[in-house]
Image (cartoon, rainbow, N blue to C red):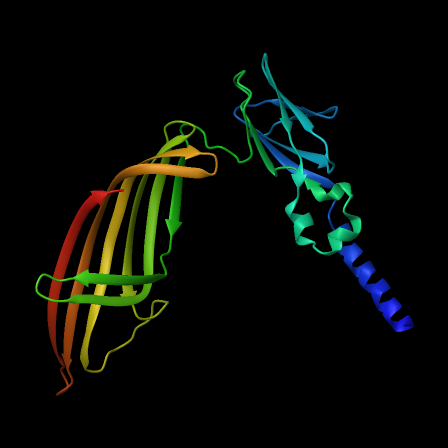
Length: 259
């Protein structure tokens, strides 16, 4: 009986220590649309590159943040919510369910400082005139090709590369141009290899799109044009002799559509 009591006490201490790892303060990044002065709980901070960092006490109470830019001033209220860290500490959080550490605030708050319109967002917003370059590496690819005089052919492989540009012509609207090329290379990394006889299919493609997009909170909606250029080859190798004969059947397909 004494052993069980000791184990229960040790378990309680371990569980409580997990909850204690949650800091009583939360760092919140405040983003503004122009240089501003941020006021919170009697503390005043000037933004640097339209950004300011605040340390807010975790508790179940509303937080009032004021931004001032020239003669315009905005006051916004941020509501507390049960934090993800607290939820993930289950079941040890049941031992201290009334702790103020259970509450948290958005890690990023965006406030328009150049208008009297009082709007608040929880993610940094892009601004008009921003230009972004993005790169991607489509590693695993699959192909399904329908020939004019053949049945369907399918392959799978690796290796690809994509790039694109996003231009924001308004705070919530942007034009996106993307291009990419993919292959069915048999290895997940570039390396020389040789085939010994037989026959096989090869496929690769280049595709892209031009879209007009609208941001709404966490979601993005868009429409536009897409294009694609697809290649299929059927290769037959003859292993007789030193110089192997190679017969290639080649098909191409170009497509233009809507997104």
